[in-house]
Every structure is written in structure tokens, then in C-alpha cells.
Length: 79
Image (cartoon, rainbow, N blue to C red; front, side):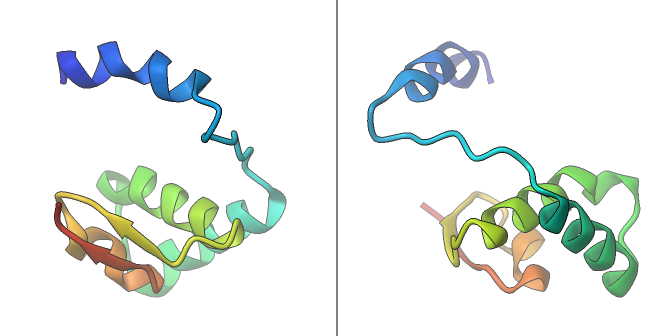
């Protein structure tokens, strides 16, 4: 985690990275997803991230926890 926190400023400032703020649509999608899949508080961040990615056109991600993102329609694989 310490390494990831140290690297975050690099990615935040990289030319290839575009910041995508949450939208009303993403918030609504996250709330609907939590209800539809019966997710509790431990899945709030995964749900919000999935909704944000989906509303900005992302359909596939690489994650160490692919099962956490599959309920939201994202194709998730491990590195």
C-alpha cells in the first residue's frame, strides 16, 4: 500500500490520465447496483468505482479482485 500511495501523484499528473468526476448518472447506477445485487457497506467503493467507470465508457479492467466487479458488467481480469 505504501508503494501505491507513493506512486499515486505520478499517475494523477500523467498526460495519459484524464480525471473523470462522478456524475449524477454514476451515482444513480451505483445506488441501483447496490440494491439489485444486495450489496452491503463493504462493497460501496467497488460499486461506486464500477458505476463511474461504466458511465465513462470503460468496459474492462485489470484488478486483483475480478469477482468484485463482474456483477456490474465489467470484464475484470487479474494482472
